[in-house]
Amino acid sequence: SQTIHQWPATLVQPVGSPLSLECTVEGTSNPNLYWYRQAAGRGLQLLFYSVGIGQISSEVPQNLSASRPQDRQFILSSKKLLLSDSGFYLCAWSVDGGATYEQYFGPGTRLTVT
Amino acid sequence: AQKVTQAQTEISVVEKEDVTLDCVYETRDTTYYLFWYKQPPSGELVFLIRRNSFDEQNEISGRYSWNFQKSTSSFNFTITASQVVDSAVYFCALSEAGSYIPTFGRGTSLIVHP
Image: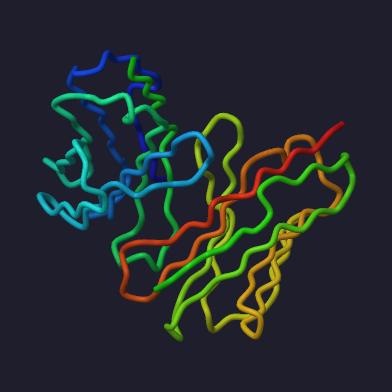
């Protein structure tokens, strides 16, 4: 069966510090991968998605970046965090085949920038 | 462009009441997919159901049921005999065929009181 791991679960970082969040998927090949952010108020904001190794599409211009160094690994990074980067970050995967298929989400990382 | 509207921001019910969560969508495609997800207080979104645009059959799974009506562009979700464990934020989502990006509604927070 497929599982998705995301870490860390919680993170408190000062403004201006770097960020690295990691997501890995097990039990599937060539998944579509997604990073979402959920600020207070519940809405899901798609940040990045990837349909293959090295292929990253950005949905929102900001100081975050994403990379996919391996088929089932998706990393969200920042060189310098802003207060506005605080939120709940969710990684998700879906079967290769566009958005036809449902997404499966990781447990999330709650990031507080102080 | 695709759009999903969940007009109910928050619903509060007492245990054992039936509750319906509304979802109205907009799309120009004839082939599309609709989803419901549950986000309990722990934060991880859980996939509940996927329905394609060619299948208007209603779905029932235990206390959960879904009513898909293309004529009104709606995909409503009903919980029968609600329980405290049903308390969560519920998201409706839409994907158009060939797109990698689903569109999520803003979610409906369901609070079930004992």
